[in-house]
Structure formats: structure tokens, C-alpha cells
Length: 355
Image 1 (cartoon, one colour):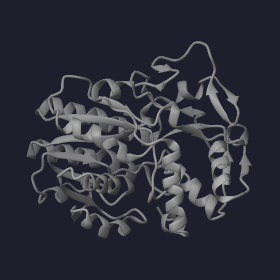
Image 2: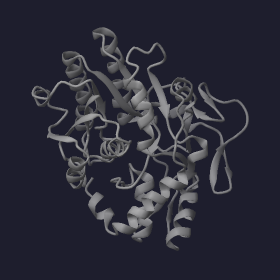
Image 3: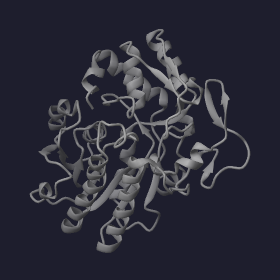
């Protein structure tokens, strides 16, 4: 399969390319990246060793697509993936939309012209904030859990399904990805090329450029080992909020099946995450870090931020039905992989600091 992988030098892009190479998948991959993310430059040599043909380009510029080779599929792993993007003063709202939505438009125009399929790596943040913020939760040990009783549409003990509302507000970041999803499906329908939308939970693994707004598990583990400041924010300042954890390499079996089934009649949108079994609270993650690296003080701030939510775990039942997919790596394996990398790269947080 001939693949154009955008955001190739980022954590997700590099992980996909590496694991495809290690599994001998035989794909011919062109990687496109503008190298704007702190740390992305460090992945160039590794990608070349994996056989990726690297191209410097910016998905926001339509002209950068004009000289790209014909491919069978475009996999979009390029995004500004922070829920605070556009509102935190580090990235403008226009920059966010240009990157996440205009970039999608340029990729879709490329797919239209080259008759290529398109796979968008989307996010759990397309789901509506209001019903998730109102979700009734209670402490169970060091973590929140949903209370028994009536649950919102699209929500069950397994988590948030694809039927959960996606109405605004969902943050500027979430809106940029939701709009990209809609645009992708419409382009595929209008111009006759295959489109798949993969909504991912929190991705984690070795080499991730984590900071407080994204790459949370990597950020927390590296910061703990380096004795950098950490803080529980909101929800009583106890760190009970819960997220699921998924290694991007576990997406490969589903990606291969999607590319092998371009005309599939089933749903085009699927959740991919670690699920309830691979979810953890910040307080529990702190306990894991303490067991691995020793004690470290975490400060507390009860201030509630507009996009913070107590419990986000995706239900991947549809992906299991469609592709027979389940996450292959447990959360313990993923966290250990990050910790091993942290010990081998003791100053990694400084590499990520500007990202």
C-alpha cells in the first residue's frame, strides 16, 4: 500500500511508521511534516531507517501538495491536539483552525485529485462538554466512577459511544476536529473516495512530546521522574479525574483493515481507546509513579477550567464489531514503556517544553 502520512515526525506518525516497519507490513510510506513541533526534528533519522521518504511541507499550504506523489491512502496524524489550543495565548484561534480544518481541506482536495482514500485520526473531544460535565460521578478509591442511575444518550458502563451527542460547545479544538470529520465524510460521498474517521482516546507511549495540555501520561511520568512541578487542577484538587490510555501502535490492525476495505458498507466513524480496563486517574497515576520512581509532591488547585471533565473513557464496541479490534497493550505496559524511555532520556521534558 502506498501511504502519505501527515504529521510523520510527530509521536503518532513516527510510532505508526516504526511499528509498520517492524511488522514487515510492506507499505511504502511518504511522510509529510513541517517540523514545527518541539522535538519532531529528533525523529527524522529514525523515520529514514524505517524506510519512510520524508518530505518537508505544511498541510496548511495547498501548494505543498502539488508535487507530492500519487498514493493509495492519506492518513492524517497532523494536528494541534490540545483542548486549550486557540484560547491559551500560545496558539491563536486562527492558527488552530488553519492547521486542523484548512489542513484537512487541503488533504481532501489532494485525495479528490489523486483518487486516494482518507483516514482521519480524530479525538474523544468531539463529544459534547455539557452532558459530560454534568455526568454524576462519585469517588471510588483514588478515582471517580459514574454513579448508577439514568445515563445520557450514548453512554453506558463501557463509556462514551459514537452515539453520544457532539453538539457544541466542544472547545475550539473539538470543533475543528468535528468539522473536519463532517467535511471528510461529505467529500468522500461527493467525490467517490473512501473515508474512515477514527476517534482516539488519550494516546501514550515512548517518545511522546507530552506537556500539561496534551500527552498527559507522558508529561506526568517524565515530570515526576525529573521532579518537576505537578498540580491537580479542579474537582477538589484531588486528581480523581479519569482518562483512558491507548498506544498508537495498537491502531495498526484496524488501519490495515480499513485500507483493505475501502467500500465497506458499515459505519465510517469508530472509537478507538483503551476502554475502562485501561483507564486511570491522575491520583492513581501518581501512585504508580511513586512506586516506580519514589516520592514527589503534587500541588493542588481547586480552580475549575471550562474544558475539564471528570470522566472520559471511550466505548470501542463498534470497532470490535466492525474490525474485531481490541487494544493489544495494557495500560501497565504503556506506562512502563514511557517510564523506561524516561530513564533512558533523563531530560526529555526540556525537549518538549516549547511544544
